Image 1 (cartoon, helix red, strand yellow):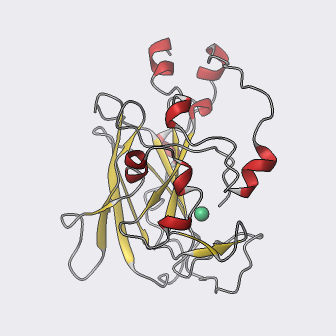
Image 2 (cartoon, protein in one colour):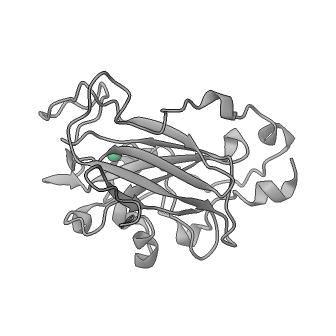
Length: 241
Ligand SMILES: [Fe+2]
């Protein structure tokens, strides 16, 4: 492993990143570091830890609609895109993981108990490896908006959480993908914690008619750029909403 690959996954410069302390997003007040951060460069130990090999991703892991005996409720969608570096080059063979709420906006999680039904045919997690061209694809259902207690009448815009592992475990990057024209963007402190309005737009997928399959699923495209001017905003790994 070379130092060049490590530089390829360095974090956002602070000016472009969501702040760790964002009072509108209440949880950050409790967990944001009180002391200045220290930069710890990746050394050999961090870069040679365990990796997730291709053999560990099953052929249906990318299809969240086929993990149970029946089909989940909701609008079936295909989400596809590429993982790119700052020069637009594809990042092949990298692990992309997603997790999301069901069509009613509820997670299958012990702490999510708001009165929207669980779907017995939907777990809400999936993973895929990018191919030689850096492409990934998921089949899932469109998640619903859900309430949270961050502020009065707070509802999160529909979103899918993305996690990407680079070439080492310590290079994990996390972001959220939103859907076009969501009416809830105006009041969402997580979406609006990204300082640059143009960068916020890079967290929104686009409707992709070429990916849409007749009488089957709507298609959306979402490219993830790891660095550079077109970088996809990444968030604190501890974000829990
Ligand atoms: Fe969420």
